Image (cartoon, rainbow, N blue to C red; front, side, top):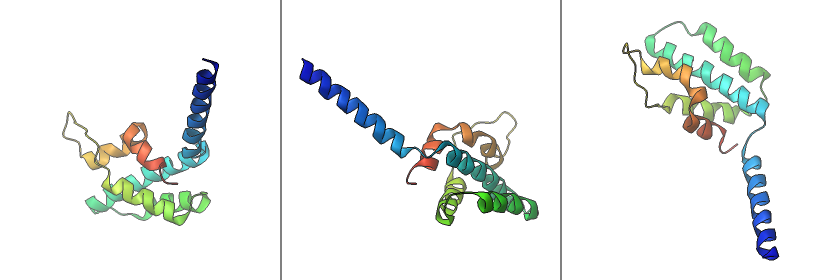
Length: 117
């Protein structure tokens, strides 16, 4: 009985350590979410043909001050571009705009955002 209990405790502890190791530090996670939101607006503005100067400056500022690698920002940008949430709207709001306001609360998006770092 005691051996089973020790084995169980060890397994729980190891799985908790592995799970914690998979998660990025909170500051990096917040940085990537901020970049993802700014990048989402970039893709939306680009689709609509709007001026991209200001949104590029915002994204560039996040990258310039950020701690992630250029490859990580590129990965997040492509993830945002491909992100298709299962959203319904009351007023037929463009999903490409609406997703910019919902992605930070979408568990599936957050998992894909923070994996493979």
